[in-house]
Amino acid sequence: MSNRVTIKSIAKDLGISHMTVSRALSDHPNVNKATRDMILNRARELGYVKNAAAKAMRGDGTKIVGLLLPNIINEFYARFANALALACEKNSLHLIIHLTNDDIDQEYAALERLREVQAMAVLMVPAPRHATNDVTQTFGHNIIQLVRERPIDGTSATVLVDDHSAIQEAVAYLAKQGHTEIGYIGANNKLSSGQQRLAAFRAGLATAGLSENHELVHTATPSFEMGHACTGMLLDGKTATALICGGVEISNGALAALMDREKDPHKDIAFIGYGDPSFYAWIAGGISTIKLPIDQLAQQAMHLLQNTEDTPLNSDALKATLTLRP
Image (cartoon, rainbow, N blue to C red):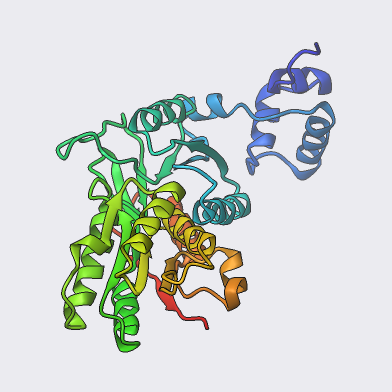
């Protein structure tokens, strides 16, 4: 194995001082252009790579950003990760992605690994808390919470979605279509987003002058399987005439359950999903849904990452929109 290329080995190779090489690689103005170009060209030829750990020890920062997501099966998370990765590349930031599976212990382990590489900031979708009074210790991480909120030491800002009005509009739309028995499937109260979306659904019912049928409201740990199972229960009950979902994977599971029962005479139910996977635009003539501002969320996250010293505790939540299709 060849020896690692260092500033000192480049200096020895060129017969100049290692301080001159260091200044040139750091774009110091005291190095003339000819010398800088010579050093940069030789560094490229030898395969020199900057030592991020040493750079951090000097107090220069690593430009490493951590992104903690429950998974990337969920198209919302996958598309957000892609948008943020492109933004990080454009701004010369290194993005490290960890998947937590919504497990708070895996989340803690990921934060530890990011601390070891001295990440400048961590953008994370927080896992459900163990208890209502838990506060996660992060040992100095600059934390930006995405979509959900949980008491986490070191949180500097949040990047949230305001879907309250879109969910209320979905209820109002279905009520105007004559639906009085509207079902809802969403995350349980272990997630802040689950609490808020259920509250929005209930507010929509109240505004439309409808009473909540508790048998038509299902909340649990969000997943494709949960959405599929809960939709099956609603169909078996034969009373719900419409359904609104409060989660991307929940929505996909619900839609799959509806398609599984295409020949069921009791399957005729109006459906409004959550999130806007690419296939929603064309399946069954188009699926109505609550669309999330993914690109804008990534842009806001990048703005906060670039302004970590003076960010407010909370940033403005970005509006979700009700997208109606035939």
